[in-house]
Amino acid sequence: MVATQHDFTSRIEWTGNRGDGTRSYRGYDRTWSVTTPGQPVIHCSNDPRLGGNPALPNPEDMLLSALAACHMLWYLHLASEAGIVVQSYQDTPIGAGESTPDGAGRFVRAILKPHIVVERGSDLERADAIHHEIHKVCFIARSVNFPVSYEASYATAE
Image (cartoon, rainbow, N blue to C red; front, side, top):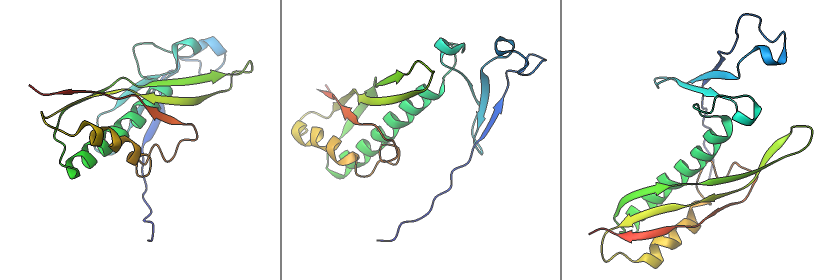
């Protein structure tokens, strides 16, 4: 099987210059915008512990969200192929990070916590087994260097 090359683009623009640039560490905002072709602008900030705006997504939020979204999209695809009708899917993932005294940080693991509502009569054992297949195909999960696990819960649609 021959792999196909894909290019993804975005534009990142720092928006936090208060007039003096980075003349002093506390003299600028940790804000920026993300623009991808044909998509709405996403306004972002740094983690609040590092001086960011807590009302805006930060890089860690975005990485965790991308990981969970990729998992969800593959789950829906594979469930459809398996004949499992998903009515609702919500996830509240948790990313565990660590920081060293010099400020360097990294994710050490992520736990996806999807709550999935399936059609009555669905094979819940098969529905759960699908999660184990996703790590083989999810673009984001295959790209990160930390373990990703899941703790799914299920309900049946009334």
